[in-house]
Length: 70
Image (cartoon, rainbow, N blue to C red; front, side):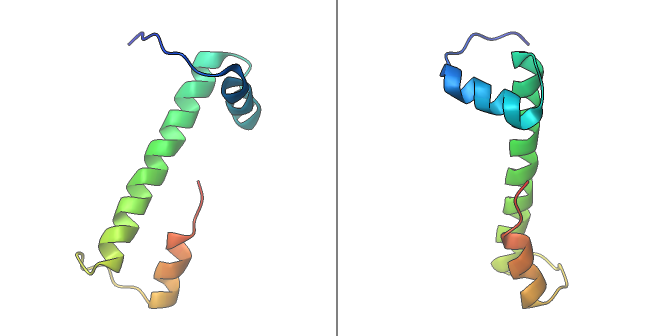
């Protein structure tokens, strides 16, 4: 899907540097994919911490997961 958005040049440059992509579109797609993975992981950790799953692990393992960065 094609969209038009306004994003600061500095943010685009930072994303391109972080993703090592020369073109803007692939860099943004990569960054969005990584963000979605992070949010899904965080949602799982939140459910586990709230006791809303039957996920079996120790408190120390859960706290380690909560601090993971993508």
